[in-house]
Image (cartoon, rainbow, N blue to C red; front, side):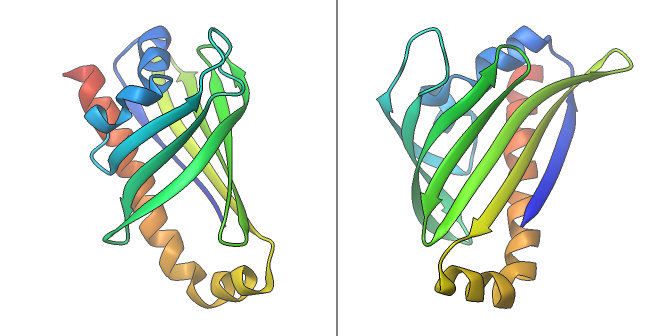
Length: 148
């Protein structure tokens, strides 16, 4: 599954970056996140940041551990998670278009196990719509926080 969503945000790239990289504070800004537990914070460099996040997905609590694999300050960071026979990659990015800043998210899932491939085939279309809706809600929550 591959998804891309974005929203315009009336804030500087630096302000957006500070909010999206404050993983500890995410539950205070993003309504779908219940808790975050940071396991490793590498300091100034975001690469290597690792945390466990519990959020509401499909009406139930779901917990995943993720880590930052790439980052460029004020531009993007990429995370990876491995769970339930699949690899999940997401990218949070800040883009400027015609003087307007946009916060975007890309989400990719790659089924690895037979069970995950079967579920992706059978339930993929249902999950895709719900996942897109959840990603947009996260971005709208961040936008609301930044724009007040």
